[in-house]
Image 1 (tube, rainbow, N blue to C red):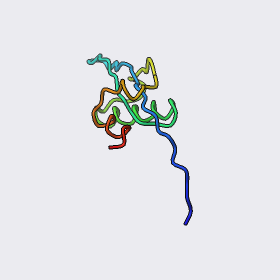
Image 2: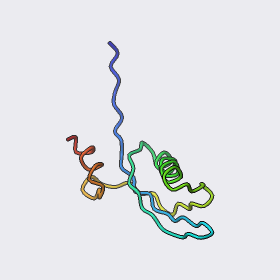
Image 3: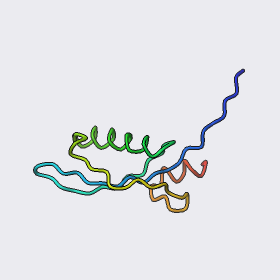
Length: 83
């Protein structure tokens, strides 16, 4: 049997705005990812699929790593806590 080390996954808060011709709104989303680049890609994919927004209508303004105590999403909080 092959043993592999599990990577420590971090929580990132990605903030930005959507600017479509008839819609302008801001967003903040918390996601699990290894690197900030992966977090940005995940946000592009999730928002694009749920809200039918193309990437060029989205502008990411900040990506920050979130400490376990500061996580707002209850599902992510439980995942990080190991419950």
